[in-house]
Length: 161
Image (tube, rainbow, N blue to C red; front, side, top):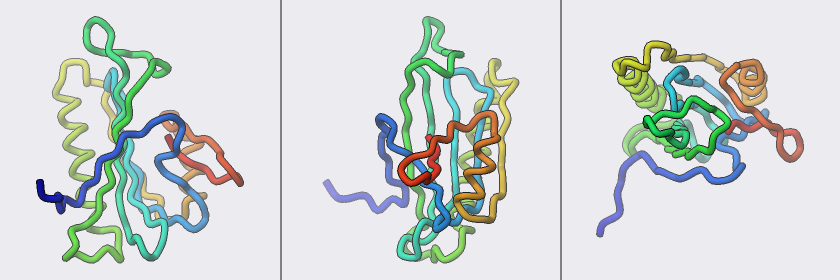
C-alpha cells in the first residue's frame, strides 16, 4: 500500500497529553470552537510552534460515550478525542497562516452548519476568535472561555485539552 500524501495526519489523543502547548515561543493566529451539540464538540487552532514547522492547524473532535438514545449531555462522562493536524500541501508556502486557516475555517463552518441542521442542534454556536499573539496570550483567553479546559503543565506552560 502506498503512503498517503494527504496534508491531514490523524492521531488519537489518549490520557492527559496536551493537544496544544501554548508558550511565549508559539504564535497563535485563530482559535475555533463549536459548542452546544449534545455528545460532541470541536476545537481548532491555527498556530506556529517553530520556524522549521511553519504554520499548521490542529482540530480536535471530542465524542462523549453515548447514552441509550445515542447522545450524552454530561461533559464529565468518558470521552474519545480525535486530533487532526492540517498543513498546506508541499507546493504551497506555510510562512503565513492563510492557507491552513482557510482549510480549518471551512471545516469548522461546515461542521457547525451540519450540527445546526439536526433537531437537537439549535443551540450550536461557532466561536472564531482571532488571537494574533503568542501562546501565553491565547492561554489567557482560553482560561476565561467557558468551554475551554486549560491546565498548566511543567514549568507553567499552558496547554489545552
